[in-house]
Image 1 (cartoon, rainbow, N blue to C red):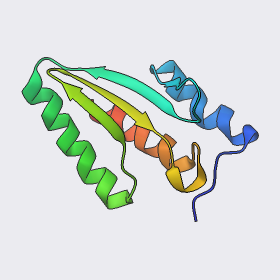
Image 2 (image 1 turned 45 degrees about the vertical axis):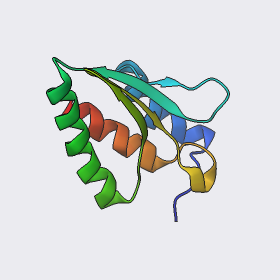
Image 3 (image 1 turned 60 degrees about the horizontal axis):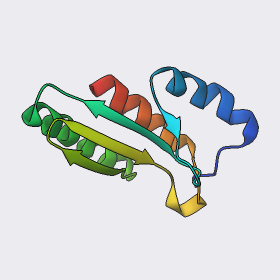
Length: 97
């Protein structure tokens, strides 16, 4: 079962994500990042690739797409906060961008 990240685990898991542009959502235990692409097709293609991994891991992002940008929010609703799954999906998103 997935657990909410402890304070001790947050540094090693979230530190590298912060360096790549992820930030905390105000008022929520969640991560956010806006990805910018060349155009709509590239943005939508990236979303499709991420969706395959999200489905495989049964961990789905909150996201919105406007033309060539995709804003993502990651949190684990079952634990009401950030879990290792959020960090894992964030790393995958960065790698696919």
